[in-house]
Amino acid sequence: QVQLVESGGGLVQAGGSLRLSCAASGRTFSRYAMGWFRQAPGKEREFVAAILRTGGNFGYSDSVKGRFTITRDNAKNTVYLQMNSLKPEDTAIYYCAASGANTIVALATTQSYNYWGQGTQVTVSS
Image 1 (tube, rainbow, N blue to C red):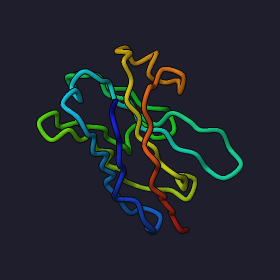
Image 2 (cartoon, one colour):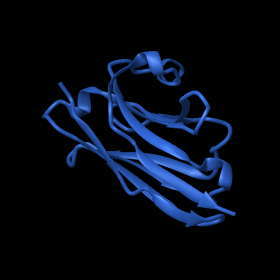
Image 3 (cartoon, rainbow, N blue to C red):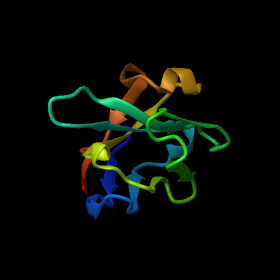
């Protein structure tokens, strides 16, 4: 069992930055690939970024590539999402999730994830 708790969301102006954190419980964090998803009102949950177990490989959706960076610190059981050059269309609830899969292709789908956090709200004003 893995419990995930996101933090770092908030209100920011367009062009600003935020860093989200996701802290995981348990001693098996390094066995899981990690992902970030987001869900805007009235829309489906969509893939944002994922990182493999050792952190050596990662992937991004086209909408955030070049602006967001996913990293992980296995010693701290934490995964991060650095978000720069934020746009109003980035407004959503952001969720982190843990997966037993370990390929970026698989990690782009919600069905690959075993555990989810409760989410943190990110609002970008224009």
